[in-house]
Length: 304
Image (cartoon, rainbow, N blue to C red; front, side):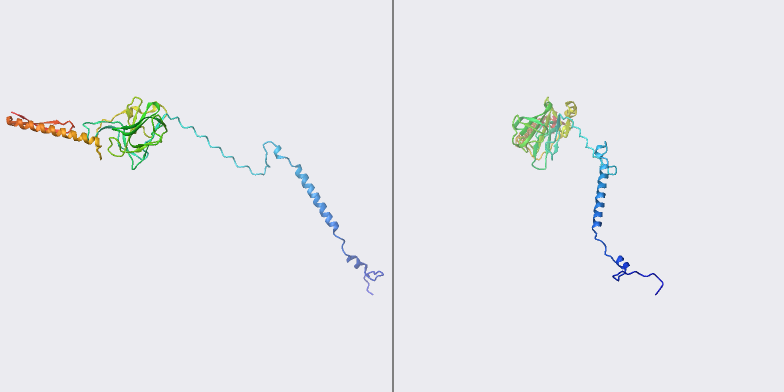
C-alpha cells in the first residue's frame, strides 16, 4: 500500500481522530457564571470609584463640579423710588375739560357805567360737566347769592380760599364744615345768579381775602408758602376789557332800562334848554360832555 502514515482504528472500527474532532461541546453553564461574576466585579469597582470622589458640598466656595455650567447672574433689584416731595397746596383746574372765557382783571359789562375788577375767571365747558374741588379743603360757605347764584366756598392750607359760582346745583354731601379732597365734585356747571350764560365763575383769595389770578396758580403745586407766586398773582392788568355777552341777566335788564330812561330824560331837558336860548343867540360854539354811562354827547352852547 502507499508509503504515507496510516490512521489507527480501534476495535470499534472507527477512526480515533474522528471521535475526537466530532465530540459534542459541553453545556454553557460555566459561561453564564463567568458573565455574572464579571458584571458583579465591574459594579463593585464603579461603586468604589464613586465613593472615592470628593464631596463638593464640603469644599468651601464650591457647590458644583468644575465642569458644570455657571449659574446666570442674579438680576439686580430695582433701586427704590425717592419719595415724592412734600406738597403744601396744589391747584388743579376745577373744570378738567374747560377753558377760560373771561380772564382775571378789569372788565366792563354792558350794564355797568365803568370798569370794575373781575376777581376770578369765567370757565366754559363743551357740555354739562361736574365742577371739582381745586385742592383739599373744608366747606366754609355754601348757599345762593344774587350775583354768584348757587356757590360753594372752600378754605385751604395757609388760609387760601376758592369759590365756585353760578352752579346749577350742589353735589351730594356738600355742606358746611365738610372736608373735601381735591377732585371731589362740589356741583354742576350752571347759569344761576347774574350769569350771562352757562359757565363756572372761579375765584382764589389769600388769607387776607385779596383776590388772586387763578391762571397763575392752576396746574402748579407748592411745598412751602414762600414758593407761591403771590406778587404775580395779585397783579391787576391796567387794560380794561369791554365784555360782549350773549345773554343779559333779567335783573340787569331792569337796570339798563332805567339808565336808558334817565339818558333820554337828560337829553330832552338839554334840548329844551337849547331851544329857549336860541332867541337871544347870535353865534354858536360846540362843546363835548359825557353822559353818566361814559358815552360822549355833543352839546351846542349858544352865546349872544
